[in-house]
Image: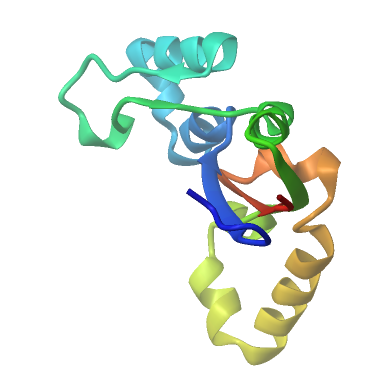
Length: 135
């Protein structure tokens, strides 16, 4: 229960997380993982019928518009929707960028500019919605 004027911070998994992870980690070569990804894309319901921990668990993967609809249905006012990883998670040499202060600042500046860009939100594996209860 949220108090009047209370703030909600809610994290979601993007509908496209397993697809991007499959590409990034090379998992799509396994036909079973490719089926899992297709099911995620079609329904949002991620199911892992294997014992492979790299194929994740059971969860619901959201589209941005679903997140915003759920917030509205709960009677909350959405303040912001943000990409938690932003494009930084796609860097294969993230550690190199992070250790170099100039590259790190360049990367963080770019992430700050893109974190709320609506057309890119689903490209982040995780999305955060910030909402407020007005009543």
